[in-house]
Image (cartoon, rainbow, N blue to C red; front, top):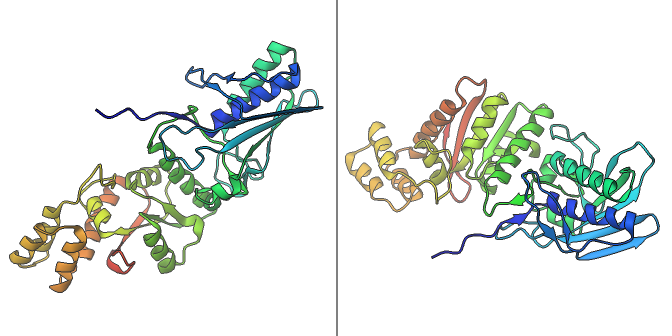
Length: 357
């Protein structure tokens, strides 16, 4: 019997815990350890402090992020909050410390020039500052500087540079809880990527299943980095978001295996959630006038790539047929949205083996 995967805490929850501990120390001289916070859905986790420092008019508290069993890039990162008093009436002001990024492009839920501390973590920190102020007689007017140790290096492994968040990580989270292997963070990044592309005035974006198809699409159309959407397996997320927030042109680019799943109507292309339908590929061969013997061999192929090779040897453009059927699926999902779609199918070497315009 498998053991349930362990949940973890978002960077926003960790930053809130550190802020709460630091402000408490600033007012009382003592750091609560562990420090307990209240998350948006009412859970009350406690966080042990990894570091604490009180000197003069400022206090710093640090928490090590525990992402549970999720392969989160920030798992184990040291998240710190330095809190100092601000002039009366100024409320809570956020500052990006070392390792926290700054917004440099429009289209995100934060203004250009703001530290990359997202709206829900900001609200959570403001609420906890107010609670601490009420409990210990503070004014609640503070400057909160959030930092993440080695955050600038960690951010290179995230979407942040492409989204125009420079200098470090974002402080994220809507519930405060990291669900192991959750799709939500990736899908949220796709949506923010579309928002940034639209705000930059891009009229052509590419949803790509991986780095190779991304490079092919960029080279083929001369697309800038902020027009490239790291779609991964989430074709449906790209199409549904563009249906509500259209861009004039979309290129869907990916390997023949994943795009054959899209051709079969699947919107989640993950190997654990959809499979290549070799029967569909065989029917495409027959519909294109291919010989029944070839269709039989395609039906018995090991993979979509194997089927492609069999058709290439026979001079039948299976890649084009997959691209056209995948394009049909995309158009159906987009419904009446004003988005023109083309599809580019590649092999593992990045060679274009099929297109549909």
